[in-house]
Each structure stands twice: as structure tokens, then as C-alpha cells.
Amino acid sequence: MATPSARGKADSVKEDLAKAILSQIREDELVAMCCDVVNIPSPTGEELEMGRYMRRALEETGLTISWQEVEEGRANVVGLWEGVGNGKSLMFNGHMDTSNTGREEFLTGIGYRTP
Image (cartoon, helix red, strand yellow):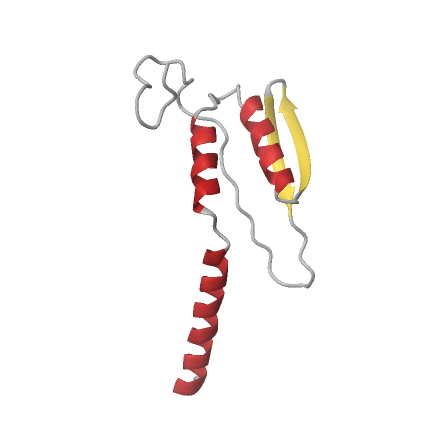
């Protein structure tokens, strides 16, 4: 079991790491990207434009990109950021398709593209 002194040091390291990570988040860029993706129609089977956007965004961050066109008009985008050691890997993934086409008349106002 760790001593109180060792626990305190570990907590301090975790807090310093959290602060370092959070300092790299640029809120204006994050909000702009969220606005961009909300305005890209990508219903199931029509995700190609969203895939192109994500490919460009990941390339701009310096990731190595793999483009997998799985069907006409549909692609997977994989971004790889190689580490320098033999540590654990971390994977984020998500869907690029949406439930709506973006062409529905009720999709207007805040959070949706205005006509």
C-alpha cells in the first residue's frame, strides 16, 4: 500500500498532467469544428463528405491517415499518431453518419444550418 507521501506525489503528477493536457485545448477551434460537422449532412450511406472533412482535419494535426472506401460514397478514416515507446495504445472512434439527412424542414434554428 502506498504511503500518504507517495499518494500525494502521485496526485500532484496527475494534476500536473491534467493541467498540461487541458492547456492544449483551443476552445475556439473546438467550437468551430463542432459547427462545421453539424452542417455537413451525413445520413447513413452518404458519409463521404464527412469523411473528407475528418481526413483533412486529422491530416492538419499531423496524423498519418488511412482512407478506406468501404462502398461507393462511404469511407472510414483512420488517423494514427505513433508513440515513441512501448506504452499502452489509446483509440477513439465514432460514427460519421447521422439519423437525419439534414434536408428535413424541421432541422432549422440553433444547432442546424439555417436556410
